[in-house]
Image (tube, rainbow, N blue to C red):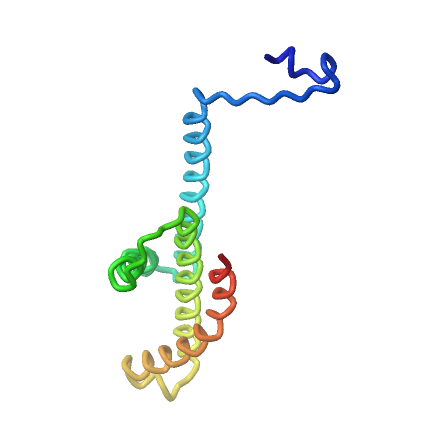
Length: 154
């Protein structure tokens, strides 16, 4: 077959062949490679959250909350809205959710660190956290819209 498909043997003939016997192995190799890249990206995001927060506990809890939102969204998607179709492209939502969740953690921690410079809100933890939540709510509302248009493209 290789001799027949050689361009020097038949300059005017193009032949392509497809080996169905190995397609499963090829697809499995591709999925394995992509899965390893995905694990690396999630590990990188986890390490970045750990470096930003300075706490293993906050990194684990933050990462847990990011991925816990997937089953909640899946419940809304299938049970509440009764959508039966699920494209394989929808699995990319995991990366979008991880990006938005990590971004929100960074915004929250930044506001918490900034709150130590406002002496009027350092009276007690409740006042400080109220200020932090109000500030992060506004900041997250500003950073979310850039993520929406790419999600709406079919």
